[in-house]
View 1: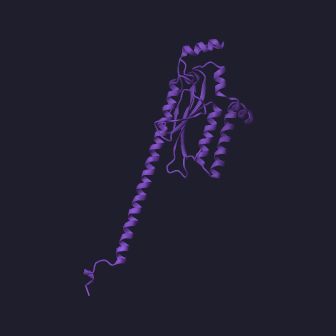
View 2: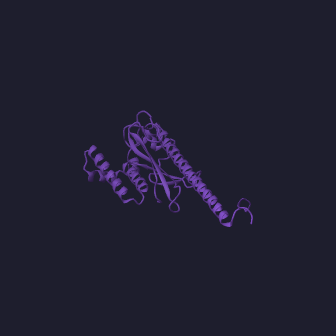
View 3: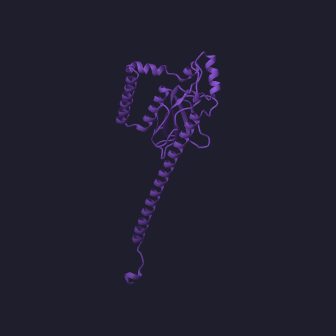
Amino acid sequence: MQPRSEAGFTLIEALVALMIVAMVVIEYIGIRTTALIDATQARNCRLARELAEEKMSELQAGARETPPESGTEVNIERYKGFSYKIGVGESEVARLEGDVAANAAGENAQANDRLEWQHDRESYRKASAKGLSYTEYNDKLLQDDYQRKMAEEAPSADKFEEVAVVVYFPKMPPDYPDQKDSLLIKARLSTLALSGLTPKQAESVAQSKGQAATPESGASGGPASGGGNSGGASGNNAGNASSGKAR
């Protein structure tokens, strides 16, 4: 009979050793996968904010030949799975904020109730500031159609609209296919900047409508900011990042 030191490993010892190695490898792969998912999510959030700020800067600079189509989703071809919406006017911005908040809350009923309460409280605050009742304020929002106002009023550097840019991007990891996260920033921009017209063109439009001519050019509020709140010419910009369920 051979001494124990020369007998080598038994089958059971070999299996136990293999099991330990397998557990270590699986744990390592899991950690690496989680790190990769976190890195991809962080990259998507950063890219979404950059894209939102880019679109907002275009609007602020008046660097569009035509006014934005409020509420229309546009795919971003250079980044697969990314798209954006521009909302103009209080009613459309409020609707987009509600969509983003609902996505962030997901299926959490308590979170949804809390967000609804916060939205109602904000509506009461805005209604009070305008000297309106809650019902009157909501009725006014329904009538606050940006395209109608643009058709009736000449663009002006002294008239402002609330504007939001929402970027939708792939959620990592998704609970089901095509699930999206969303990021929203908002600002108050002049109707002159939104129109895409030069001051002289806006003046001609004003004259054709029998309205006062637009004064100095001036496009909008200050540049949109990422990662929080920043000042604008007539209000604050707000950046809000949130995770959302599939739309």
